[in-house]
Picture 1 (tube, one colour):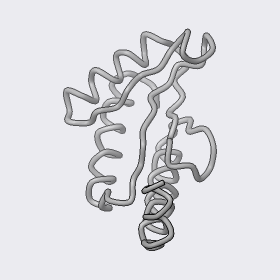
Picture 2 (picture 1 turned 180 degrees about the vertical axis):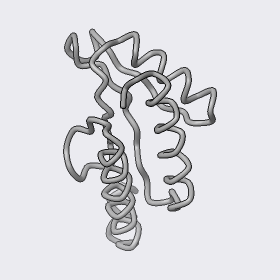
Picture 3 (picture 1 turned 60 degrees about the vertical axis):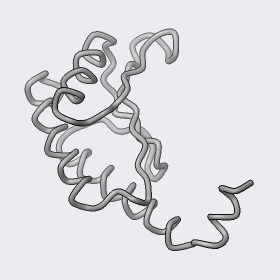
Length: 112
């Protein structure tokens, strides 16, 4: 209930979360990442292979980004992914840093 209160009392936070979400998704797609959906703050970066998702999650963590890999049985076989949660408190600088790290790791793992 407190979350609903915050949404009503602080509409600027809701605007920021969607602005951040759209920005992050657009930048990631422009790099060649397969991002499911269009405007939801939970952002799945589709990888397909469970081993790739595990390696990417580990490499992202080594570079300061906590991003959880999901694979079977949590998601269907062949649909492994990294799942991110964009929020209203992320700054553009933080999002750009994450995008830069995703680009580095994605390139190294031949995901993009």
